[in-house]
Image 1 (spheres, one colour):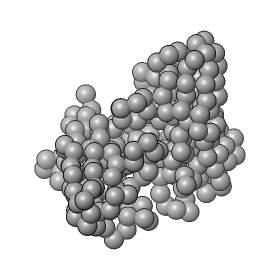
Image 2 (spheres, one colour; image 1 turned 90 degrees about the vertical axis):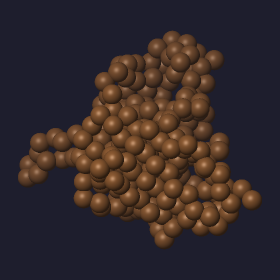
Image 3 (cartoon, one colour; image 1 turned 45 degrees about the horizontal axis):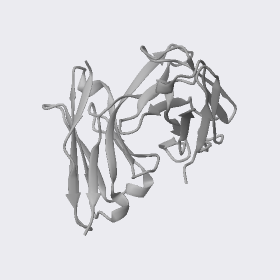
Amino acid sequence: QVQLVQSGGEVRKPGASVKVSCKASNYNFATYGINWVRQAPGQGLEWVGWISPGNGNRNYAQKFQGRLTLTTDTSTTTAHMELRSLTSDDTAVYYCAREGFIVVAGTPQDFHYYFMDVWGKGTTVTVSS
Amino acid sequence: QPVLTQPPSASGTPGQRVTLSCSGSDSNIGFATMNWYQQVPGAAPKLLIYRDDQRPSGIPDRFSGSKSGTSASLAIRGLQSEDEADYYCATWDDSLNAWVFGGGTKLTVL
């Protein structure tokens, strides 16, 4: 079955960096984008960013610009999220999620509808001195 | 503060029908289709509804979605104890060029 397996929990000190991995299996990795979503303790979901394994295009949420880097390795079908200059506010569970889509024929162009259809189990990142 | 507004809590008794709401603006709900996610405690979110009212395979037809203007709703009929979870609405925001989520509604089955 389609699966995203994330790396284990991490503990970092303020100011440090963390890199989380997300290995995809059982689908064409290049065809679907990967989103990263985080959830602080007791809080809701927050979109972090998106990357296309097919062409490397990226889109980062404004608040993470400058300290976030998303990458993919198509040879290992793995996506990575690196977040730098960590503060306690970055303590959260970080999820990777496949961006599924459907295409509906239309005129003059087809319509694409996107959603996050497969999720990893999450990686807990704790930032503490 | 989340871009989309959801009531923080809702409740119902087994067998009842409940409706969860989500409101936004022209740049998000009024621009793109709505997706809904269910998150049971300690687990990752799960796609429940996509493209406003479509159910992925495996999602029971007790769950239904609708959208009108800048608001969307998720209805659950025949409420079951296993439906107790957090429910998030999410859509694309054309002004922010970002996915946006609601703050989530915690559904309690009494």
